[in-house]
Length: 126
Image: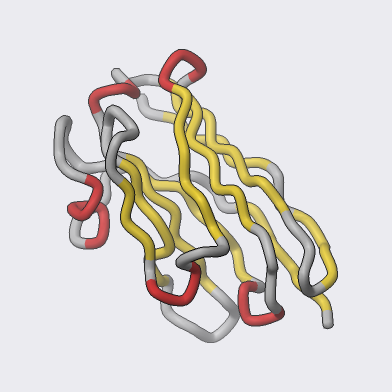
C-alpha cells in the first residue's frame, strides 16, 4: 500500500515563506514522478508543480513560476515544495501526488496521477 504523508502547512503573512514536505512509502519512490496540487474552497483542484523521477526536470503552473520550487531527496523518499513571496491567492489545501506508473516525465503529472496525500493547509493572510 502506497502512503503519502504531507506536512509543513501553516499560517503566514503575505510575502512570507513555507516549505511543504511529502514522505512516500510503499513504492520505489525514485522511479516515479511527483507533483503538488492545491484546492481552494469552492474551486477545482489545480496543478502546481511536478518533478521527474531523478529530479532533473520540473514543471510549474504559470502563477507560481519564480516563487515556488519543487525538489526531491530520493534517499529520504521525500518531495518538497519551497514557497516564497506567498500571496493570499495561494491559500489552499496542498496535496502531493505520485505518478500513475514508473518513469514518466514530470509533465505527465498534469494528466494522470496515482496516489494522493491527505493534504496540508496553507493560509496566507494580507
